[in-house]
Length: 410
Image: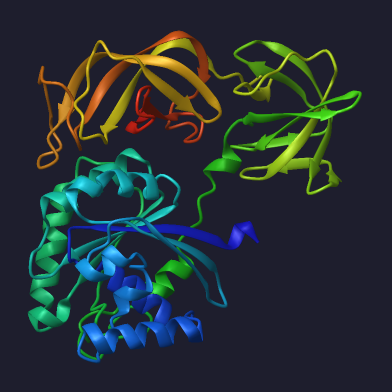
C-alpha cells in the first residue's frame, strides 16, 4: 500500500560511498535478482580484482561503470517485511547538483553520506541546505568508511558536533546519525562488532521505522488538471490529487478562472469511488457548467489558492548558462505553464555559512538565492511550506527547452 512506502534519496560528496551503500542495502536485504548478481560478479572479476563491486548495482550506465562515478539518478526498488522503498541514488559531483535536486524533490527522506576521513565538505553543506529548502521530513546522516578510521568513536562524535553546529540555523525536523561502513556492511542491514560503542539502530531498521510524510493529508485539497477527457455528455478531467481529500458532492472552484461546480463522480482505473486523497491518479466528473482547462487547479471553494502575477521564491540555479534579468522563461508549476522572468535577485546564500549576501552578478550554476518572479498573467499557487506540489516550479529556457532553475515559493 502507498502508506507503507518510503521514498528516499542519497546525497554527498564524490566518492563518499553513496552507490556502495545502496548496493549494500540491496545485497544484504536479498533484493538482488539472480541474473543481475551474476552480471555484477562477472564485471567485478574484470574490474575490481574479484571483490564484489556493490556500486555496480546502481551505476547502470556504461560511462558510470568505466569512470567509477554516478552521473545520473539511479532509481531502485526493494522491500522488507515491514516497508517498501524507492531509492534515488543521486550523483555527488557539483556539476550534477541539479540531478540531486530533482531526486530529492520527489522523496520523503534524504541520506546524507559523510566520509569519516574527509568530514563535512562544501557539497555536504550544499546538500544539507537543499534538504532544508525542500522541507524533507527526515534527514539521516550516515558517517561512512568508519573502517578507514579504525572504527574510532571520537571521529564519529567530532563529525556529529560539526554537523549540529552547521545545521543550528536550518529547519531539519527529524535529524538522525549512524556510523557505518558500506563496504564492510557494518550497521547497514546487519549490526557491527567493530563499533560496540554505538547502541543505535542499523540503517535498515531506522528506515523501516521513520515516520512517513503525512503532509499531503493535512493540507487543503488540490487537484491540478492534466487532461480534459471526451466523455460524451459528461465533463471529465484527469490528474493527480496533490493534497487533502476530495469527495463526490463537494463544491469546488477552478483556479485561476474562478469557475465553480460540483464533483459528480470520481473514477480510478475504471472503478467509481466516493473519495480520493493525496497522490491518487484519478478522473473527476464535473457539473456541465464548469469552465475548466489544463493547468487549472481544482480546490474546495472555501480553501482557495493564492492568485498573483508575481511572487518571491528561493531559487536553485541549475544551468551552466548564467541568468539574465531580460530573459523570459517558461515557468512550469504542476500542469500550469506561463511566461515568466526573474524581476529581481534579493540575495544569494553562502553555502559554507548559510548566510545571505547581496551580489549583483547574474545567477550561475548551483547558486541558491531569493528572487522575485514576475509572470505575464496571474497564476494560482500555494507557498511551498503549505503544499510542495503547488508551491514549487521550474524555469525552462524557451530556446533550448532546458530546465535552468528549480524554485520554491515563499
